[in-house]
Image 1 (spheres, rainbow, N blue to C red):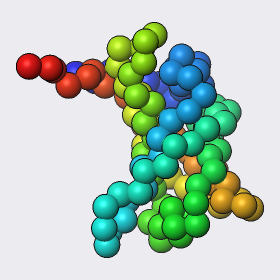
Image 2: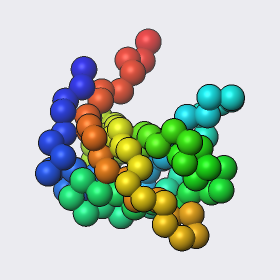
Image 3: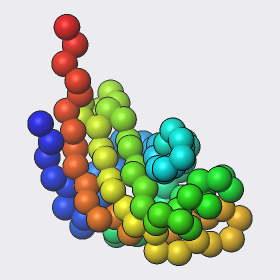
Length: 109
């Protein structure tokens, strides 16, 4: 089960998960690149720092996912799909959130 997160609610929703998340960048030639990041959120705009390889993949493909895992306060993970707005200096990337969902954890047998 997943629940939509309205983009205007994204900053407040993400704050409940803590200051860090995981950025997931697709690599068509290999495994996805997953990086622990400290997002700065202003409305639907998110700024994160990434390494050179991830930045180069974003130059080519322009999309990424952000994942805030479930924590003690939140029983559902937060997943945001985003598109690149601008690649800044020193590996900083500004993205626009396109969709956000809170997703339930996998059932445990």
